[in-house]
Length: 223
Image: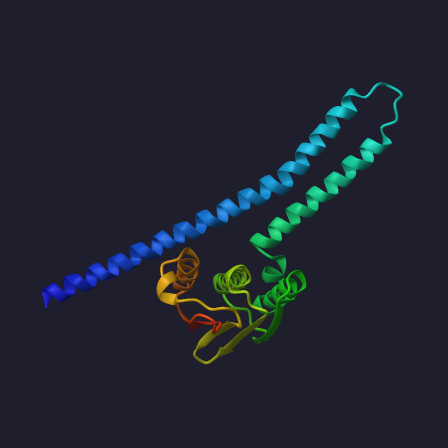
C-alpha cells in the first residue's frame, strides 16, 4: 500500500517536472522567436535609419537632402509596420478587443492567404467572452497546430472546429497530411509544447494519427 503510494507520488512528481520543463522550453522558444524577429526586421531597419541620419548630418551645406529624407521616412514607416506585425504575433489586438471567435477566423484566413493550404473552419462560440487566459491559450494552440501542420505534414486541407457546450470548450484540428508515428514523436518538442499549453489551463489533449493517414487533434477544457 505504502509502496504504491510512493510510486504514484513519484510518477506525479515526474509528470509535474516534465510539465514545468515543457513550460520553460515553450517560454524560451517564444523569447528566442521574438528576439529573432526584432533583430532580423526592426534591428536592420533601425540601423538603416541611423545610417541615413548620419549621412544627413554630414551632408554639405546647400546640398539637397530631399531624397535621403524621403528614404528615411519610408524606412521609419517600415519599422512601425514591423513593430505592429510583431505585436500582432505576440498578442493580436483582435483577440483582446473582440474575442476568440473573431481572432481564430482571422487566423484561418491569414493561413489560407499566405500558404497553399485550404482552411475550412467552423467557430461556434456565443457572444459571451471567455476568460482571457483561455482565449489566449486556445489561440496559441491553434497557431502551434497550424505551424506544425504546415511545416511537417504536407497537408493540402485543414479543418478547424471550435465549439462550446455544457461540458466545456472543444477544439478539433484535422489535416489530410502524411501523419506520423506518435510513439516516435511522443516526446518531441512540438507535442510537448502543445501538452504544456493545454495542461496550464487544466485541459486535455488527444492526438490520433498514423503514417499516411493525416492527423486529428482534439483539445477540451472543462467548465
